[in-house]
Image (cartoon, rainbow, N blue to C red; front, side, top):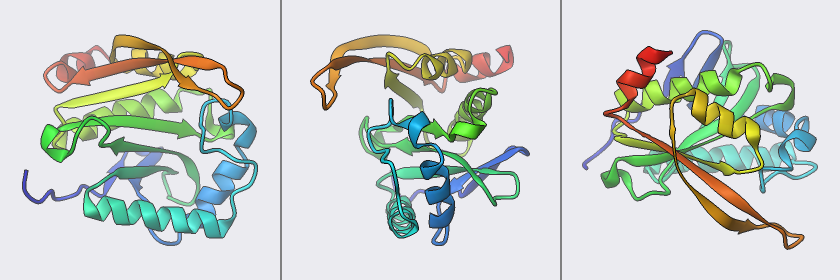
Length: 195
């Protein structure tokens, strides 16, 4: 594919989606620590406490991967970039950059959830992904029990492609289904105008 000129930022007025930078660790720590009870059911990485130092290490790791073009982890910030509203990313789980496919992941902090922000962010990621990034296919996978995540994908116009039954095993031994959604670039303009 050659060298990708990485888009750095998507500005949507009420929020900004961008790569993490050194120094963002304090914002990440505050957001995940205040949202643990909200995140723990569906985000395996969530833990009761994540220090600023751990968070700073993570954001620097995310930034390095971004520059190396191996994973594109993104923060969702308020319009002034002073508060982290959640996290997202274009993840290369369906092949490398040459495949022109990415999987979008997302989490929204507890006190920003439930007001349509996830749908607005996913819609922005589709617009950004299909215009400034090389993506021809964008996917979304979620725990089947996570009805909010499933609704976000459906509201944004992604098609349910299938369900991986008993796909993941929890620590207690129970299994859950993974719902697989996606949209192709060729279908996106029609979905975008449906609004």
